[in-house]
Image (cartoon, rainbow, N blue to C red; front, side, top):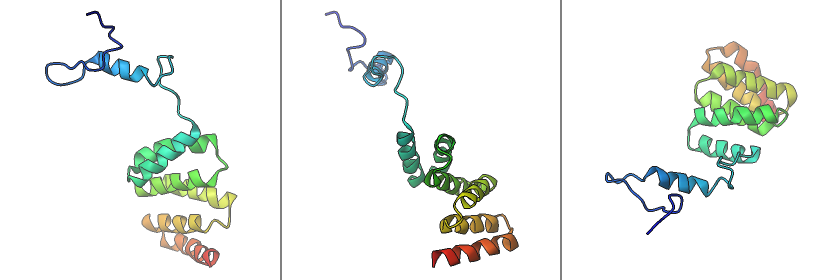
Length: 141
């Protein structure tokens, strides 16, 4: 029996690991015949970043969100989630930069004000955080 290597999906090595040909065959199913995996759209990266954030993989979410924000810098939601991912992964300077960008563009985004206050407090900058916290409270009302 003569079987092409890209057709046989059931080959395993003696140790139980799948053979390399099996992986190549499986990957080929998703590459549309180009030999390369398809490139993710911005929407797909946004959804994957949200899932990573929900799974508390904040660093991986931030990596994906950085590209999304670069491609769509005027969108608030990706930038806010990026700031939150930075905050939760203790990248407070980066979180602060993103939050300041948001409040500059959208001065009534109360959650950005609150997060900026919390980010400053977490850095021990309580006096600087106080006005942002007051603003967040006033905007939320």
